[in-house]
Length: 436
Image (tube, rainbow, N blue to C red; front, side, top):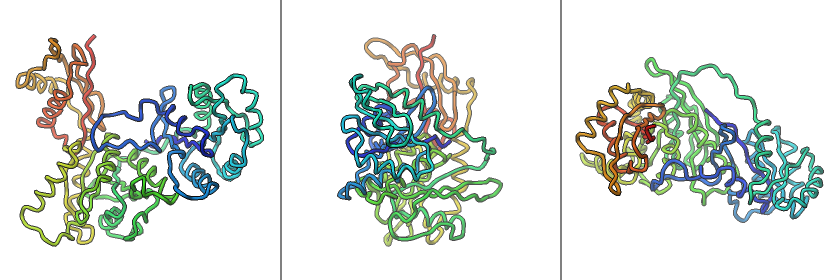
């Protein structure tokens, strides 16, 4: 499901990143503390009154040495293209500036709802100063204090009132998958090779693909929806405004995917950015397949080359030990026929449900093999296990004290589940709850 998206736009030094962090809260570091799992500060998910939304912080985008007005224009352009609602942030300290009016002129042309907020109203006596901002032409300005969180609720109420209604799209039974990876690893070439036609523009120039492009096809009896995404660049190398929101579009494509194919380049090897890109899909709980492309380009290969490269991948992507690895070539079509079947299998594993009675038989066997640990003289007791969700498979274990479930024993239980059931390609979430 694609979440409604809010973009925070405004001139520099009005507190965009402060508001972004205030909205995101602790969710910036959610999921797990795993090396190689990235948390991008210009895109995140937030929640208000039980409803989630995506958030773009244009203040977190470094445009480098471009002129001041061009910087503002680029930030506004990102918001116009990507957001459902735009939060136009100003500051009471400087009043209405020429730069604010420049942003307003750009936003007038956007066919998007705009909520106007005046930040840094920390002192109630300054509330009367916000009326000058009516001149910007976006209706009532909302007073806000990013540093204290005052007024944020009223702003979010206005934002949610402006979000589009949730659509009632027809049910789509296709398996949705996307290719993610660094620019120029061959994602678009893989799309074309699988489809057997030139559906997507292919170019050796990094970052050619800008948009997420959906293509449906049928393999056997199964329908697939393939989402080709723009390459995710390392933040320090992103200069064009279009590249900045290409990252965001890739993340939104992951949100829509059942299975994500992390594409590596066999010729250039594994880079740090590869691990960070894969972290997006891992954090989202999607099924994952690691695709090593351009395998035909390696000149010197023997019977051990695949095993050695696979071990290298396992060493570098330790948090993706559940993901299958396939070595392909978009140019020669080597092993490409294996991909649809692998995607279908991973999707099945993402949706696998296990009966509670069977789960607890596995739990008893696990407890017999490796008894629960004792921490500070208190032993962990596990009473019951049940599955509560799929995509990814999520299990709850009822215990005497959740704090006693150490990460290592949690890992042991997950490994026992993997040994007993086929969860290849999908992460498993395990939640400990105190038995009442």
